[in-house]
Length: 295
Length: 334
Image 1: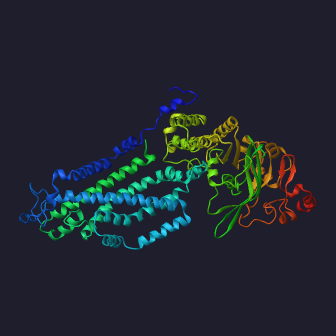
Image 2: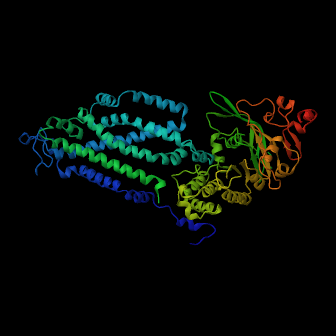
Image 3: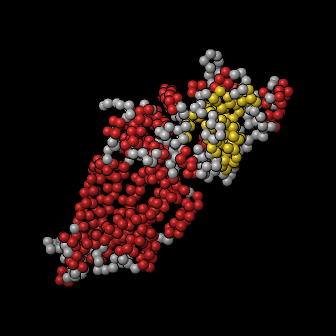
């Protein structure tokens, strides 16, 4: 390579595209790739639900075919009202997964920003945020969410609000503790000595260092929120019936646990596989984002 | 406006205040640094060297650190009266700092190129991306790192290389004043020598003024024009490097410092360290801060702060060289 004085050949050494590089490292982890494939299959199936089975089949009752075992016509059997469990699983999954994803992201964004602000600025700001948080945390999660849903009425948006309010507190505490630690690092001091403003320090020095923890926690939370949302619908506070939901399906299947166990099996399996696939992706992401593991 | 001096510190007093105690970190410090000169700030751990550096950049910990009085003139402008915005424009651009430990002063998740680029972009927002990249490359070459390594992360560099990167960041905007806070303490001896000679070269090339904070008198002898010896938050002796290394008259603390390092020409079985410890900065002695450890301490030393005795460029804050002290000297020295 030529070595000219003005260093113009240095432009040739472009940094590898960030996404390409992350993908290259993500691909190395078998678990992560399996998780990703599984998630794409699940998400793809849910997105294409209308093409696979019409929504009508998920809600229309057919008493002639109550509690039918899995067959060609009803791949996952039928429930106590004779509704197609396969159609319910697909259409219910759409609601469950989209609520879980949206609630996770909104709680992650709100919680992380508040946590970063509290941890970075400290003092009065920190106190104000953390003490208000104590109010949220002093009420048991499930009771809190139920109260919110009950007050606002069960609907997609209100479920989203309730779950976000119940979960953002985790992020505030997590990110705050991370930031408290990161803000003390020498390179933050060095950046300040280099004339960087607070916003810049948070964006280019604190967040990139905390992002791994946030992402892993977020993926773990998706799984948790899927279960949580299932709990809510199990308790009858989910989407109003007859709209299907995974938790609601489990709740309904409980009565027939002995006679029609497949009714419990498929929604549980759906929840487990979705949660597992997201966790695997999260694990892979953490490794892919950690610069120490870069080769 | 005095344009001959890049930095003038007058009667600076800094405390760290917690709920439990008040630490008097800097007590009436006076310091001047001429343009293009290098000042060695010497003293043992806890003498207030780093606090002085942070005061110049106004980066004292906001909760505890307070500047009580004094003035810091940078190129004729009062730093202590500047608002945060003005300070941000100065930091990294006109005054840069190199921190002690290169292992921790680089962000582990950003490539070194990005970190140098950040320093450049902060103070040259109008510069095009390509120009910034060119500047990054030339900064790296300047400190002896091939420019293709700009896409690598800090953990791919050795300690000495990291310190070079830190220096590249500090010099990226060609500052007028470089504060190097023990830049070689965390490095091994051979790398120390390399980094030091590189710092010297760059300083001469850019005609940068520099404050070299260190407790290594060898480094001072190699790099500095002027020397200031700090003890318990004040300068107890200052002068040109010749004054400190060649003159006969010295503050007893400086004498102690020199006695505690090995000398190639004189054969001794044991080094003689200075007896005792630094005074507790929350409870400094009323008189000279060094008086409890001083072998020549007189009655007056415990009562009053010694004024400065000046001989040309050489300043010593000690009663031994002053008329008040000369009479009592016979009694004090046995």
